[in-house]
View (spheres, rainbow, N blue to C red):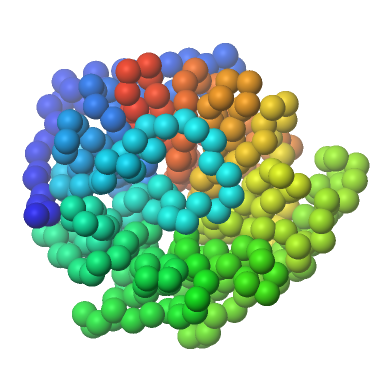
Length: 365
């Protein structure tokens, strides 16, 4: 059963939470959004400043929604035991994970929340709207990674062979993709819908876009090829492979453009393709020593955020970049940090505080 509960946090509690701040070595102010005795995961922030995240308290898994006026609502949204364990793990994850834990992130759009929940057998999709929850899928396969595109619920659905993109139109689930290869990790903004698609001919991941009711594979030579200049300026050499031979995964769309991860030799790095630009450019981290994997890239308002693995500490750190910055800057906090998002002014992420995972925030100035 999926249901909601609404309540208002006492003003004193809100004040105490707001005072939970930490100053980093370079005078960044890190604020703790949550401070409790259970785990908080996978934050997400909408364009109208609705903040949502998952939390697990004992055997109960829920989604918490924080509205701009301070009102709090909760939705029951179970997770299976294996995914809870993996959300707590700080193990390095290579490549395009399908399915991905990022697919369990709730998706707020206006006052609506799309989310996946575990029904004791597999994951299904539900819509929370006006304090009511409607279950959108009911099958024997995993459904996850929901987004709301042009007011249509879209998600990834396993069909027994691979993941396909589906959408709900007039209470009928229709396939956007139908093939024998994985289509996963959808991202949308305005009229655009993009995802990572396996190309069996090249044995590589590429980005696909739904344009005029047709699936169009984005030309890597065009947008990755444009990174040649920024890459050579930093490293003094050309890209290690021809763009057509590179894996491109984990797209995210936001106000300002498209971000993605691309494979540089054995490493995934962040790329940013601004709106109205011929192609993407390479984002270099402020620290490269022992850094060999980037994950969970997001963008909004010209800010790009991602998590990067530090082999020396065996944990992920959060980085942010904004226009005209020569290097992406690390958010200097002790503890494993993952799954960052941004609203164009702040960065939110889940971080381990020594006892459990909490939600953190930093303002980008």
